Image (cartoon, rainbow, N blue to C red):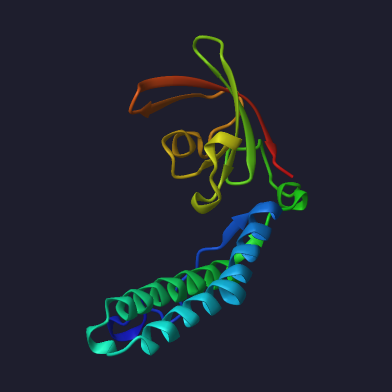
Length: 173
């Protein structure tokens, strides 16, 4: 807060930490939306206008709705990319003390039954559980954050509670 109860005009911005692959996928998606999908939607709008009275045209309304969604996604991707930081090995060499679980870490876990699992913690929009990439906002990801090797972590999921022991933590890079 500043003088007079007004908020600071420069709020702290979230920095998105992305894997190099995640950053490339996001740039590729943005490129597709800007250079291909935008043209397709413009053509759709043009065709709807040519079909007749736009005040009563559901095709025109659909096209405008699609354009609005497209422009929203483009804006969101541009903002995320502008605030993104690509994870590198150097990010982890200056950390003092033991490594803790955070975004960009690969974590090997063992359940109480002896099953082993390896997860990589990523930002929500880069998550792909089938590929072992879990969100820091998922039940497992949230529970693991800030823990160290040897810690036992209890995770509540729709299937019930599971206790994990952290066997190793290492940077994904």
